[in-house]
Image (cartoon, rainbow, N blue to C red; front, side, top):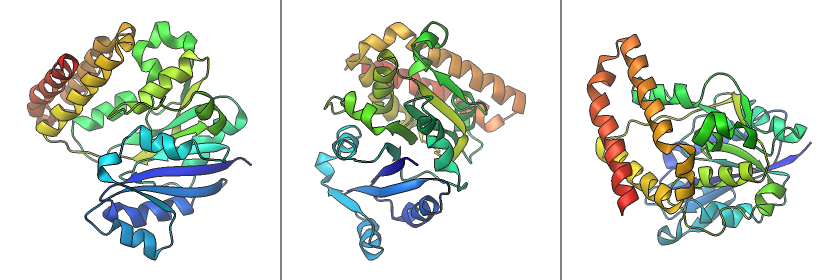
Length: 282
């Protein structure tokens, strides 16, 4: 049985930690080598909880945290067969979440996999999750680019697994400080180097947000900056992917007669669109 190292960045995550940790240690049919909490200096009791429960953690200065570099630094040290990245705000309800997430890597059918995400809110995120995380699994490779375009590189380290030797061979995130979309950056490298990625619909996490328009704008501004700095991705249809998602959300909201979503829709889409545009210009 392959052993697994789990890496979870923590920042002011006290309210998540106990439930998250307990859901991890209850996982069945897997061999967890080590659970690594990557703790950015926090103002809550996250560190106190980690200390009192004798959990393994590494402390990071707030000014030094990086979504890509922090993950890369500690994952490259792993001696486990599989590395798993998660975020502090997921809710794991199944004790087979990790088994399904890593199953295909163990079987040799892919080198990376990511979980299905479901939101507990009845907002726009409900429809983005439906579109991006359907109920059927799939494996993608370079041959899927003509059909899927940018979505070939869709990957999420909210809950993902990567074969450790592959992560090291591809040199992680190449030492780049990526404030967002580090998962897509690595997925592109996987696909272009002839590796396969599996979307594993049987591995489920609940991941819920209710972003304010200002927060949404800021996220998409960062995303726009990412695409500017990695302009090679544009040739795979960034606008087409975004337009398809916007259309899906509108159709589903109308079908559900989701009035709150329909009222929010034009403002939400505008925040995303303008944020991307501004991010690409700066």
